[in-house]
Length: 172
Image 1 (spheres, rainbow, N blue to C red):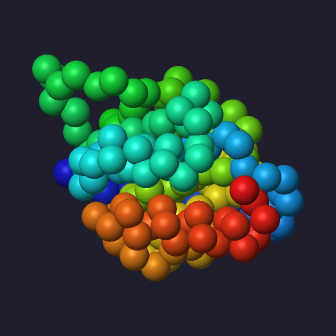
Image 2: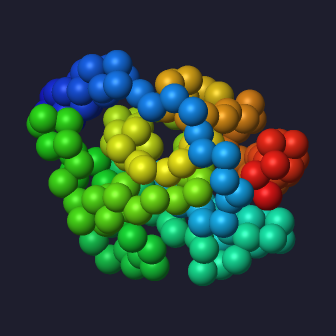
C-alpha cells in the first residue's frame, strides 16, 4: 500500500515537472487515425464505445486501443494491449512494451477515455505523440487540447459531442 502511494507520488511529481515543457498548438490536419486509451477499471463498455466511433465514420483498422486496469486477475483474458499499475516504476516511468509502442505512434487524435486522475494514465497521455488529444474536463487541463464535460458512463454523449466539435474545427 505504501509502495503504491510512493509510486503515484513520484509519477505525479515527474508529470508536474514535465508540464513545463508542454507542446502548444495541435495539428490542423484532418483526423484519420485514432489512439484510444481506456481505463478498464471503471469502464467496461469498450466495445460499445468502439461501435460509436465506427458509426461516425472511423474505420476499424485506424483505431489503436490500449487498456489500463489497476489489477489484472491471473486467469483474466485480455484481447487488447494493456498495462497496469505494477508497470509504473518508482521513478515515475512506465516500463511496459505496449505503452512504449502506443506512445511512440503518431496518431491524428488520442482519446483519453478516463475521468479520474491516475498517474499511469496521465503519463501515457502526456508522453503520447498524438497530434490532437481529447479527454474529459475532470482531468488536468494541460494534458489535452480539447475537453468534454461529461462522465465516462455516457459514452454516447461523449462521442456525439466529440464529432460535433470535430466538424466545427474541420477535423473530419
